[in-house]
Image (cartoon, rainbow, N blue to C red):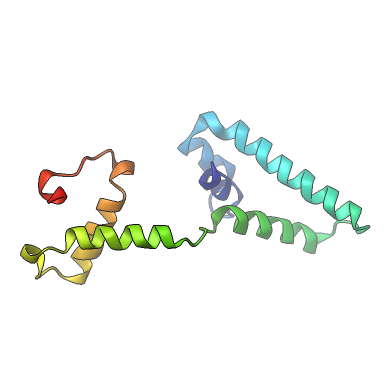
Length: 123
């Protein structure tokens, strides 16, 4: 859902692109954006300020950063290095860095690609 929120708030994509990606979740994205806007308005009102253009821009920037920034985690890095170690075997010692990068990317995203690893990958 977070990637749909990031898509909806991004100036190049907006909500119409969310409809193309997943039309069933458009209402949920709208509701979540409305909740974020309402929550920010309540916080601004409690501070005694009135909304102006800068605060509107700040809101969109805050929501864009909140939903489109990945949280750094050592677990994700360790998983990536593990995939690299699985791929870099003796028989593949002459792989170029570009091909290694592509293989690690594909292996790391096999669940998104609906693929299963081959028996030689598990060796």
